[in-house]
Image (cartoon, rainbow, N blue to C red; front, side, top):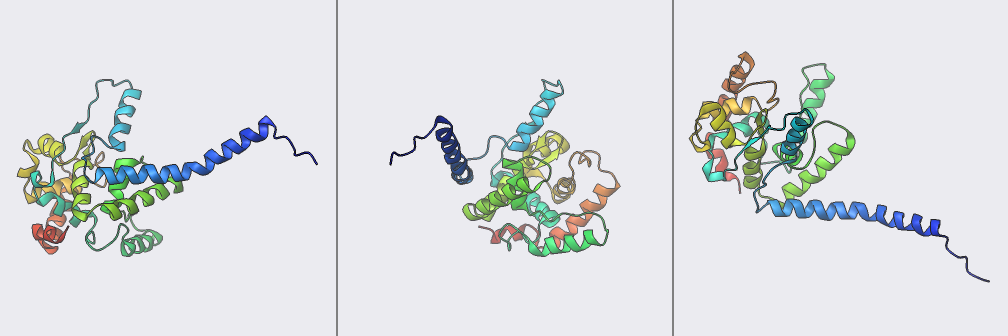
Length: 243
């Protein structure tokens, strides 16, 4: 019996199927290489920075520039990483990328109709800021979770914290400790005091809504609360246990 001849349409469908099956594997390999490389190489920009520039250009602001100037860990005041931990992720040293206790607390609070709160860890914030886009959706959340796992697996905690304080957005177009310190306080990142660090951490939930330059009542209250929390977790001594 003569074998059936494969039609051009069949060959094309099989070729497309092979590509579709290969895409997930390619994504896993590329994303792993990205994260592994950035353990040792400081990121020249983040996905959020690129998106903000493209947004400005799309609005006709061709002269828009972001403020971003990387500083190594020993060039940033220790008060700032302590402030962001106290403000956003007090179990940073203990969890492996996802704070299940905070997630459950947020779920119960939101179910009661309280003020909406999230439970993103610093590792998740690094994942989102570096590689993804803003917004929700299960696809984005799934990719964020994958990058978070990679970051926690391939980077030490100290590196995660170093990258976070350098890529976090502290105001519209103002990214990282050095740019924020120069923009809002006229000094370098290593000169930030505890109150200044706490004020920067206070605006992180919504840096376009809250201002470190002109702190309103909420930011002022939050700054004082973060300073108390910084002392409660041990101040800059907290960082001694991070590898």
